Amino acid sequence: MMTTATAESLDEETSTIADRVFGQVRQAIVEGEIPAGSKISEPALAARYGISRGPLREAMRRLESTNLVERRPNLGARVITLSNDELLEIYVIREALEGMAARIAAERMSDAAIADLKDLLEQHRREVARADWQTYFQEEGDLDFHFRIVQGSGNRRLIDILCNDLYHLARMYRCQFGMKSDRAADALKEHELVADAIAERDGELAEWLMRRHIRASRRAIERRLAGER
Amino acid sequence: MMTTATAESLDEETSTIADRVFGQVRQAIVEGEIPAGSKISEPALAARYGISRGPLREAMRRLESTNLVERRPNLGARVITLSNDELLEIYVIREALEGMAARIAAERMSDAAIADLKDLLEQHRREVARADWQTYFQEEGDLDFHFRIVQGSGNRRLIDILCNDLYHLARMYRCQFGMKSDRAADALKEHELVADAIAERDGELAEWLMRRHIRASRRAIERRLAGER
DNA sequence: GTTGTCATCATTGTCGACAATTAGTCCTGT
DNA sequence: ACAGGACTAATTGTCGACAATGATGACAAC
Image (cartoon, rainbow over all chains, first blue to last red):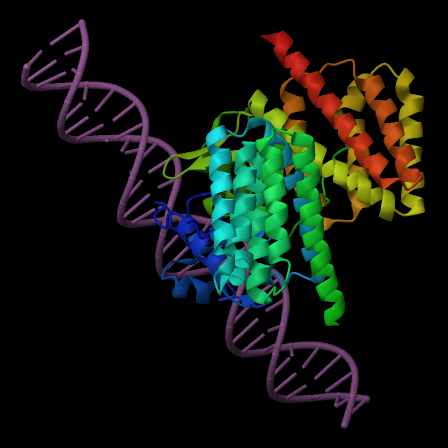
């Protein structure tokens, strides 16, 4: 069972130091080890990972491009604090992009990949009884499903945008706030509908269902945010 | 009249050297000054811009994140050679993203911005007679229109993805191959339809029209590519 | 003649040090 | 007491040099 839905296989042994520390600090940021909004000191981080400032600066540049840190010239880098509006913006983009991914996946996904997708859903269905299922599903299982659909599109740039940028932001948000909603059961049902549409090679329906699914998730977040204040 | 449709205003005076050279080499790549597929030598480029390798490497990292250059560890960086398939992939993403942008723009764009948009189209309509109009429209005017719609969405991340990544790739492709199609007149008409839908605050129609417009552009490219071989 | 191996070379990756800009603080004058 | 300015300190931006990895060529063996 895959645990981290990332495109590049997070080798931890990518010959270059800058790439490795990029993955490490990204994980640290996403999982909240480096708190959101905190200022990042280059010498401190460099010492923490036992490297020089050169590779660390390159890693920071990559993190800046993935929108996980903000940099202002001569002032330093800060971990982003994703506001509520920005979180909703991400869901809008996911609706458009993953809807398209579902459409293409319905047309181009291999039969074997579709079978695997159904296996995953079957597994989720069986695990509903688990005590920590809701937690697991909301933290990893949900993204695993979306990850496979996106992969099924075969559009490399689409995969890149979603898996290397947006999914990390979604995970970061989940690690910050508990994201305790009762939508897990509904989400699983919506997943099954999307998978059925893909299995029937109905691209238009798959896109429509996927968009409705993500829109429902966004609305649930909107409600939660509205009720919180 | 704006000539380069980029999000950050390409200041040429962003206090840090790495950022400035990033913009310069990006322009050089997009406009073909540095040919596609060519290997990039760090010492050579550093000398060319009169800087050291440190800032240049950071600029390369940013270029790598925007998918304009490919890097392989210990092997160097190469300017990407966007294959036909990758170009079509970009149009698929544009269809999804700009369709959503048009929908939101129809809901949230200010009346003044809509008036400006119509002015731009009116200007394009008047310039149809110009001898070099087809060239201008295909090189800049078309992107100007799309740029404004995307801006109208107000979704910062959406704006970032489209203006800082995809549009540069589209421009790069246009600078490489002549992109001489007779779709200019049709495209202008489709633009007007989209603008009308936005003016009537019909988000669903605006999205549908925008998607059809971009799909038509993609199909025109497909036909051209098929006829070429 | 072909192929395998080795040595040289160029290029990339990494590091430590210097220069420049910013933030904070303390002092002074009104 | 408060405002303004200058000084100090820390952090970032930049540079040149060293180490390591991959490529190119020649030479020798089969």
